[in-house]
Amino acid sequence: MKHEALVVPVVLEPHPNADKLSIVRVGDYTVVANTESWTGKSKGVYITPDTIVDPARPEFSFLDKGRGSERVKVCKLRGIYSQGLLIPTERDLGEDLYNELGLRHYEPELDSSMTTDNIPAPPGHEGLSKYDIENGRKYLRKYFTEGEPVYITEKLHGHNQLITGAGSEVFVKSRSNWKLQDPKCLFWQCYEPVKDAVNKFLSVYPNHRVWGEGYGKVKGFKYDTTRPSFRAFDIQQPNGEYCCVERFLDLTQEFSIPTVPVLKVNYPLNYDEVFTLAEGDSLLGGNIREGVVVKPMVERREKIGRVFVKVVSNKFLEK
Image (tube, rainbow, N blue to C red; front, side):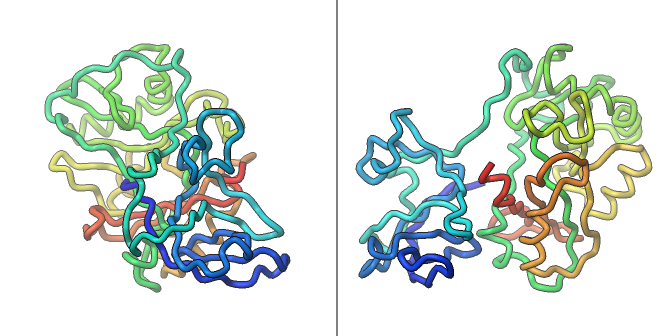
């Protein structure tokens, strides 16, 4: 996923509940801005939620709380969600100032007591790229057509994880690293509840890769489990191609591999409905929904690579 801070046009719209505030739309994001501060200004650098900024820089000094760095979050201002930050600029539209402004993306840290040493990639899985997904508030309307059949699932709040095999051995991988087998390792703990189902699958389909969400250990997001667990969201073939939706559902059902909650299958895409679905409660109970993931029913690739996107809920980002 490419992180950017693009210069965008700024057009002020009236805030329905506050005379001194305005709304600026950046794609499917909204930013609530002080009307007086933006009067006469037509361009701004847009910084997305979950970006880490340095308040020692003059552009971000108003965010300084003495913590050395600050994370851009979503907040509700007079009833309207403000999703990110706009900084005035005279730079050219479309310029990317992400590196120039010293920005970085927020990545939650796993409990170090539950991780383990990294190991080399197993045979047949060398050079595997990170599993990345683009932001739907930026790309949904650009790469999906209204009405096209799509598959929508709930995005769980946990960690990205891969389970695969090489020869007779099973291997697990975090988003970035292959993990040494250790009962104290969170990734191996997540494998335990599904090992029989996944092992049976790998015995029939060797060198396939089962991608999914390890979950159940994030504070406030226990979902339906009392221990670390795993739910699949993709199956990748040895040649690197991903199974289409119908094939994925057939295989996970055949081998009883649990999947992330499915919200819609073969659903005629409605842009607004996707953003509404992102704000619901989790189907696994007891939690707000982190968001949704949208995929075409048939795999395809375009300029952004593999076409699929996530839309994270405002309630989750606010929390």
